[in-house]
Image (tube, rainbow over all chains, first blue to last red; front, side, top):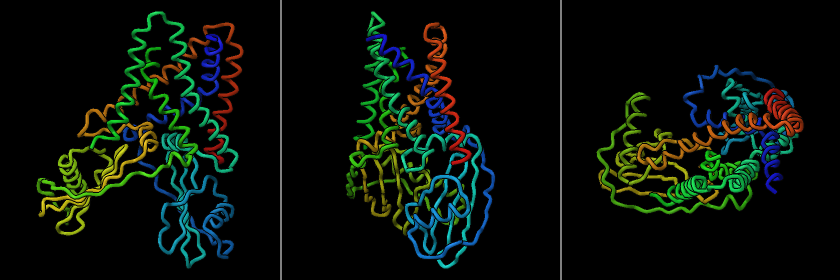
Length: 193
Length: 200
């Protein structure tokens, strides 16, 4: 049993290593943005004529515009649409394109913002969820693997420590401290004024 | 090994919240509880923002918000400093967010009272908010320590990855299969990141 768990711990670690490193390094950069982020370059803009003008849902309009202009990335909508305008973003790591289509015009305004290497890593960190686009779905699957492996490493690590070390005192102190701290923090944040 | 045990709870929380970001199941979107009440609130004179330039206005909002938080006996992150505005001559509105809680506070200085709307987030929202949080709360040392714990766990996981590679290469019997797994999975991982970055 010990050897099986150890091999699972080792091989899962080797499989997900690159993703985990990316998540933790970019996560550190996210947590300390002022240390890493520099001023982004000014956005570039372009305008184009809307190819087809029939009434349609905003999701369809966004998909048509994305196809017409060859904008690469995931479509995201704001929580509230601005008045007299359809707005959406086409986002992929490193690039955010804001697309505005005024209601009474047939013109598409695209503002493209690039975010540099650190910004790209941060955006890679934030990609999640399955939406039917193959590449993004495979990426989301690796995100799932990273999440599962964190749980697996934590539990298998405890098992390996318990079986390997004879004196459990200091390890138990660390484990209890960790659990008590996290549980205490959740309760504190939930119930403190 | 002991570093891993010290980070045990963070890894579990991190793993669960990562899965939840990827799969926002309905049961993890349970509604928050909202309550509104009025209470006496003695806040030192809140400054006006009229006619001030942007940096000065931010500084004033920060001072006003900090005074309101202290009067309420609560804490929130410094990122919400700009969320404060005079609605009318006698009402200053402030908005505070932190993991677990959200406050909308309308302070009426002349009456010495405040109307407070508190939104208490669900357990799942709290877990998601704790994911990678490194916010420093000037009014709560305890809550600020979560940021240090996040840094500690980040340092540990990166170190564990590097030391794991070192220890694995020392074991001759598992070097071959490990090299294949690391090479194949590493290539796929990097290719996926590059593909999603350059081709969406």
